Image (tube, rainbow, N blue to C red):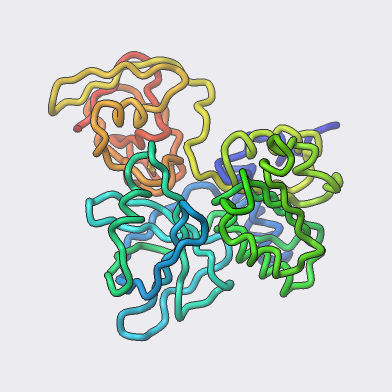
Length: 357
Ligand code: FES
């Protein structure tokens, strides 16, 4: 099948294609005359992080799966929290100094309260464990945002593919799709019903539109054909879940290059076309060898687990460092200056890069 000029570009981290000025101009025209949603695929990909910090009070803490805690947040003075749209997230500033992003999973646009849900990951970077342990009802939580890079478009034929904690950005989208009268369906997959957070809420929106795949009931993971069953060439697919699920869906939908595909990752993207390089940490003099299939951040974390990061996808700016020497292959989606590098995605063009770290 021939590719359009849009789909021939590599998809970005959000499943959107297109990142040049011409595309940006067309995107603007499209927004003006054709509505926002269908333009989301062409939205310019550089983003500037919003650095306004907000304070919220945790008013409720409850488990929504054995390993998932949900926190309900409110303005400490009883006012409204900043506006948001389904698919949006906030950047939580944890007491340790870590920053982590969590999707807002309450009713769409609700500003009296936010809800976030966090899966505890024992072998992660420690952020999810801290989220589970640091906050109780009455505590203060600091955050930036909300921001959104995973919008619900204007498509009328939509399939939501959900894997586990990937339900968090999708649940408000489902509510919105129902409110808009969109012809939507959802498949929610997980290891067991017990470990699928917010499952009852997803089903309650429209039981006849939701398919549940519990691995323990089938004795295996869902295959991509089962995840995409009923998705036609023009169906817009929104997927959020583990990397393996996301990549399988992306590959399967590649044959429908004109069909919208939107996705959000909760984990770093695979390194594409990476070449090995050396990363010198100027303050300590350590030289790290970065293999072609790993990020600089990943190797830095091996050495120092307290290395700052959040999104691991090149848009939040948390991991930005100053470059003292070397040629950088900049791959971030937030602005990187000539002497800056987002170590979660950007790499050296070869040889060695020296950073102020
Ligand atoms: S961790 Fe967000 S840009 Fe690197």
